[in-house]
Length: 90
Picture 1 (cartoon, rainbow, N blue to C red):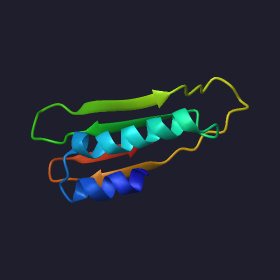
Picture 2: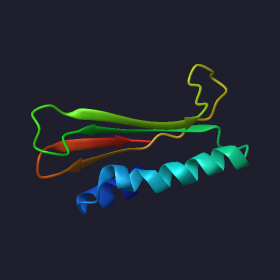
Picture 3: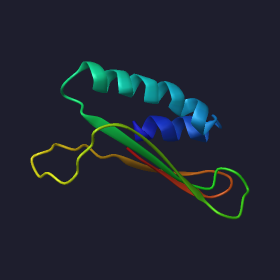
């Protein structure tokens, strides 16, 4: 999923407009199934020419990282935009 988001951001898609349908579908999957309990998406970096970078967190469901018995999948992608290097973690 992080590679898909990185691919779209390299094509200059708006980040929040890109995340809305992804967040809606993931929340529907969390609500309707038992194999996905929650999700968390983090974007960090400079999307515009501002001096400071920013972090955007999108999450849904219950994602407990304290239990050892939980199975957690993790994916990270770094992309180079014209302003800086950004990272996406899912």
